[in-house]
Length: 84
Image (tube, rainbow, N blue to C red; front, side):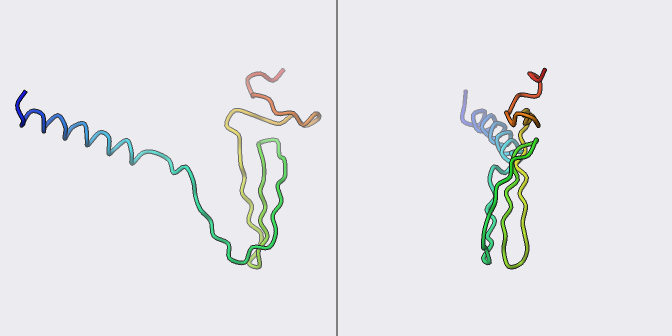
């Protein structure tokens, strides 16, 4: 394999890697609340609610499970497919 063929192959692979990187979801987000006062965590059937109080108002972050749910009576967390 000569250098030109190698460069062509490398460019194809590199472009595919770039498109895959662009499609990834952002895994974390930083939120700055300079007037923060207090926070609470509530258990919900879909996961948790994190409520943050600030001078500008309340912010609610809904943390939802993909394949889990909380039993209303016992409060235990189960997989949705395993529920009986």
